[in-house]
Image (cartoon, rainbow, N blue to C red; front, side):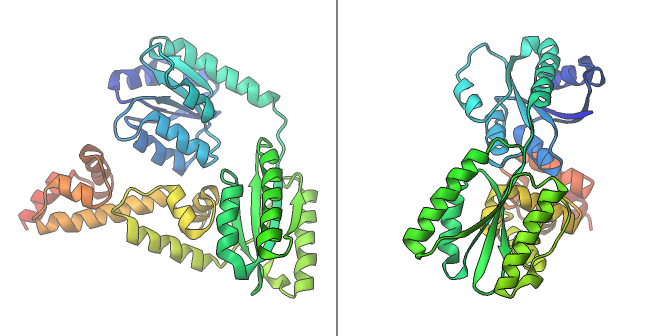
Length: 357
């Protein structure tokens, strides 16, 4: 059964979509309903739904911003846009961000089930391929290589691999077969960069279908063979079918993520910001953090923000909107909602309770 999330700032629209569409009859489960784009995006990053039905115009974060984030971070959620008007001024951007459908709200009850059925048929007709490539480059030019790599593979999931004192690997993962051409073009760009600026050609190892056990093992064996020649085979670790190699030291990566959060919690930070700062892809970072810590990255961020907010409220010298701004929340109403979720009561009530102590 497909998981669906919806977002609309108008309560009666949300209620209509929740209650008047028979989600189970179209093979779906409505798992979350949000009143703005930021709230929806936080839930999407916790567990990517199959489909997100999103109002284009919303406060805090628009539907277009959510669709852009989903597209740029390669999140496998299919987006359906809702709009109150029959104008298509956003159609060009919607196409750019691979939005599946564009539905007028007055016909949403009929059109959403039809749109989901079209998505289902399209997915069933697609031949899913997967691809994994590892590019080995010298450590001495690490920063130059990583910056150019991000430029060459800007929308592809990647992961840094530690391969010894003198070399590191960059592993690219393509899950759906629709970015293989981009990977090939990126490889050519990287070859040219390494030859022209570093004076040597990178070694590239590929697997055409890493989801198949035999191809997974072949890629692993190729890496082992290469590692033995370089006398650092102990750093290549076979993991699950879809996670062939362990990246750099887990504790080090985790520490850098936690440090970034501590230093930037008062700002508007995204998964993409953190991933770029610690040199991994956003998709890998999200899964890595959930696996190692046991909770979503933004749960950690919001938990820290609310602890900082509590401390400021206890001092009693700041307005609630000031506390919200100082702890990374641009919208006071949204801050109050998140505060209540983590603290068990609204910020005003918490402040009054502290004042009576």
